Amino acid sequence: MLRAVSSSLGTARAASTAVKRNTPNIVLVDAVRTPFVVSGTVFKDLMAVDLQKEAIKALVEKTKLPYEKLDHIICGTVIQECKTSNIAREAALLAGVPDNIPAHTVTLACISSNVAITTGMGMLATGNANAIIAGGVELLSDVPIRYNRKARKAMLGMNKAKDVPSKLKIGGEIVKNLLSPELPAVAEFSTGETMGHSGDRLAAAFNVSRREQDEFAIRSHTLASEAAKNGKFTDVVPVFLDGKKPKTIKEDNGIRVSTIEKLSTLKPAFVKPHGTVTAANASYLTDGASAALIMTEEYALANGFKPKAYLRDYLYVAQDPKDQLLLSPAYVIPKLLDKAGLGLKDIDVFEIHEAFAGQVLANLNAMDSEYFCKEQMKRSGKFGRVPMDKLNLWGGSLSIGHPFGATGVRLAAHSAHRLKEEKGQYAVIAACAAGGHGVGMLIEAYGK
Image (cartoon, rainbow, N blue to C red; front, top):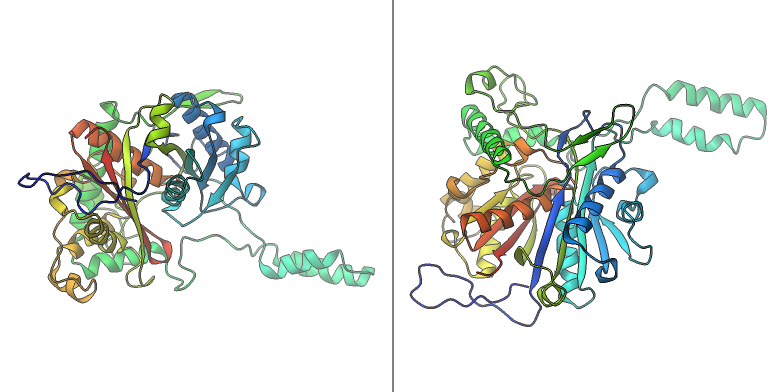
């Protein structure tokens, strides 16, 4: 899917090599997101479908997209509300999208809206669509909590009970199990281990100290705070909340700049007492939604849209979900750049999802490790180190927040906007996800 951008011999940049022209250029026209907010705060009384609706509505209004030009809607989500299992369709209808425009929902943990984007890219590349909305949402303020299995079986059996003694017996089973709910957990089904435990072990394996993690967290919050104050978050759209005290939510509320002294007083959150992952150097539970308009370049220009960036290529990877759960960026970045014929020096912007500070730093160490690259990635030598002065310069998931299903679009929007502001050509997105999965995406500045 990578399209050619010719480069002349002797230029400092490798530009793009070995590129095919048998598929259409695919472009990001624009992207929006609701404010990303700490779960249990301002969006706590909403449903996820409400947030996704707001993102779709705002995108349509911002881009002035006529519905007759829209072919399909794809949205990602992780913790599904059973009433709106195809949340893309329900949100689209609530947003006023005509009912003859199909919509479907995808899920792949923290990279769900990346899947929405790349699924759309596939439809555009094969001529099955010209314009697609790709988005995602998570509302962790209200996750589904189930009765335990014994109570559920008893409830289903109540309708089949034919006499009073049978009903009383089943009723007793229900009452007995009412106070033993099944609570959702951010844990791997295959290993039973929480992502926080994996993050702690990963940091230890790659010699990332507690202080390095805390310093990276402070960096994330500081850069996000500066970006917000300087008006860089142009992808954020306001959300009006009706009720007894109507108000409009206009900005993220989880960005908090602290000091290394304060962070050093926090106790480990997962591996106690000697772990290094704390509440401050880990991403927090977040509510939010996003939406992006992607098109073929030809269709966008023919219909008066001005693209922000080219969506050049993508790659998914998967590894051992126990010991390498969060290492996908280290695997996918080299593979993606090899595929594109590019090197580290050709990339101007990196946006790497910050699940944990230790996870990001461990991945940077892994790519710069001779041993890891040779033994685990089967490369001839180490790949190299991603420069910090190109990484997440507007903050990341540690500070802005991480609604599981929505972050991928945020990464794409920030990559496109940073490329324009920093006058760069190529951006790389990388993110880890549950199950040992990961994604890498290559984005190119439009007009370069």
